[in-house]
Length: 274
Image (tube, rainbow, N blue to C red; front, side):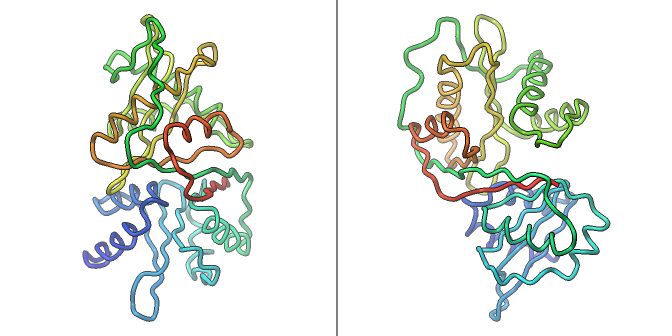
């Protein structure tokens, strides 16, 4: 892709950024020389009106809810050569691509629907009080790596792996080690034991996306996840960026915490697994 087209694509994504932080982050990696593919459709004014991005076995449609998106001519040939693990994006766009793929004989094994939420100011609820004796939040140190990898594995088994998926310990370790090298993370420690963590999962032009919120089951019900999230958000907002996240619609306790923190619902979001 020529430099001018990269600039045009970035301008298009910046206008939609709040709805597609994951795609924006992947675009930046591709622009910097990483692997991936970007296809776009232009309108009569030669302006980009829709975009499809492929990165790391995932497809990210940014279609502006256009139901008249033509099936990309390359799609069948492309799907026959490249393994696609997931589609993710706002629900309307994910459904459009899902329907196009079904016409090519590709059917999702599972759909998971989320609420896409955003925060652009300090948390509005102080979950940090009252304090829990012995509980601290801190940045990770090299000696925490193995504890964090175990927490990540537990998080993936509980929240990420689709119904028909199989947990791969080596892949989880590799991907999380890479995440540690480029994302921000906060851990919760209680009386010397690492019991929880939260991290950014993507960083776009002006926003962080957070995820990976996990507390060991035996320590739940004490508000630790809420306190940890509030502490992390306070620091991220102070860096001058907004926050985006998506949370499963069926996870009402988490959605309630995010609402108390000041998050606003902006769209439905969907991930399809193949």
